[in-house]
Image (cartoon, rainbow, N blue to C red; front, side, top):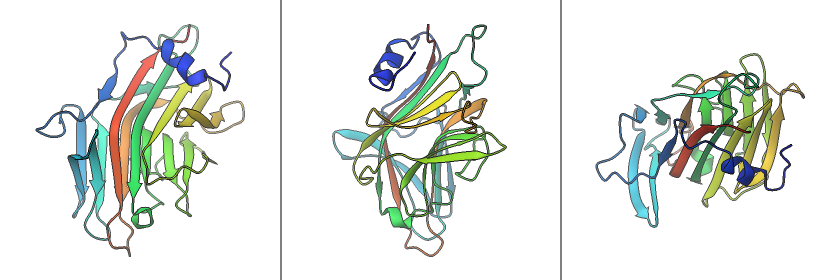
Length: 232
């Protein structure tokens, strides 16, 4: 049984190093590796590598005017299947985590902003089959799961979003958990009918500037990782 106290560290210990994983620290001075990441821009949207905030190495999703959009998603997919993993399957867990902070949150379109895991490469908060973090109508961070039939959103505490935090998604048997700074903030379960997706998932970051705003919203993404494994 995985309890709430210390569960994330225990899960990390049980992750198999032999399975396909992603660890990104944005060290490549030439930019963002196109064999690992796809960048999609609308109008004046930008995705750029930056070391302007040392010691963080990061990318910044930003724009220059209302309606600009910036997207960064992984080329590869990972199995996100909490309702499928069992005694006769190899993968038993998926962990996705990253460090991030926001700037000018009121300029970010909270009806579409999304960071997490998605079945399609061009997903937004409004897409089906997602699991991740969103902004609600008051620009407050929430967790979300969507299985293509319904969705579940929950509060995840009140982190100061303009400072760096570590965000983590942990999916295992009939459960998807959401952590902020290694503290469990929300748990979505199949048992409670909370709409867990079972898909092949991209790592996904999407930011759209508010239609009537100044276009100055930003998402800064530092070290991130996606890794599957086994719970024995």
